[in-house]
Each structure stands twice: as C-alpha cells, then as structure tokens.
Length: 227
Image (tube, rainbow, N blue to C red):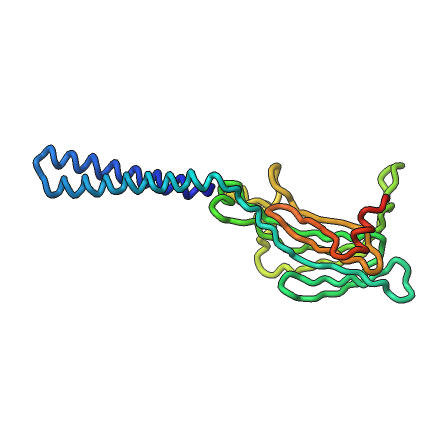
C-alpha cells in the first residue's frame, strides 16, 4: 500500500480533531454559530478520515505490481568469412534499430540503473535506467591459475551530454533518497548469454535488475545446453 494512504487519513484526522475541539471550545463560550460550524466540520473530517483509512486497509489486500518492461530485443547473425564474429541487431523499446559486429561465444548487455529508496518507490518514483554497453566475449577467457588478461569487443550504447546524472546520483544521491550504487542498491545491472547464429533474446528490466529470456526455440535450446 502506498504511503499516501497513511498520510491522508492522518492529516484528515488531525484536522478533524482540531476543528472538533475548537468547536467545543466555542460552544462552551456560548458562541453557538461559530462553535457549531467548527464542530460539524470537525465531525465531517473525522468521518472522512475513517473512510480513507478503510480504503487504505482494503488496498493492503492487493500486492504491489513490480513494473517490468522490455528494453531491447537482440538477435545474432553470423558474419561472412569470420569465425565467432556476429552482427548483433538491437531493437530498442522505442523502436530504434542498431547493428554492431562483436566477437566471441557470449554476449553481455549492461545498463546503468538509478534506484529510489523504498519509501520513494511507495510514492511512485520508479527506477530509471539507460543501456550502457553491448559486449562480445569468450566464456573461457579466464583460468584458475591466477589473474589473467582477457579481451572483448564491445560498444558503448549512449552519449553522456551535459550533467552526468548517474555520476551525481552515485556521489550525492543518498542525501536525496536516490542511489546509483550503495550497500542496498545496485551500481548497475547486466545479463549475458551464449552468442551464435540465429539466436534471439528479449531483455527486460524490473525496479533494479535486467532479465534475459529467449525469443526463439534456438535460443531456448542453447540456454538449456550444459556448458
């Protein structure tokens, strides 16, 4: 239930009590007209507070929907005469189509996420995001022998004009109930999956994380194959 359903009845109750007591005080001083009006308004506000409280209690029986939305569809086509190189086609939520060539047997798609504190989310302030990068890489790029270098191919998916809101949220956001990285929120979010000719995926975002799902049978089968 939203915080507003606690605030409204509380404010209405306070106003109703103030008017009621003021009305009683006027009546005791024999100021019948002024006292009667204040008392009636006070009783009305108290009744309204009761109605709003009951409505709020009823809303508590509903579960809050976690708003999930699709941010991109991504598909892969084998580049001609190039092993492990694919044309990755991104179809963004607003309909924009982008194509990039990346190399590897896996891809990763990352996003920067700015989240609001739970109290702010209750008031309707949803998380905001922007896609950060698309990367091609190899699944076995690291070993257990020690820290090793690994190469990848990728592209940044946004330009950062003007004020860096994400950087500002990271540095100062906790002062205003906003965060782009702290102990209780995510600095960013990313998904990764196998990359091969003909695979198609759908990428969605919730309040704080990206989610990847297969869009065709080839991708569904590939995700169920053992590494």
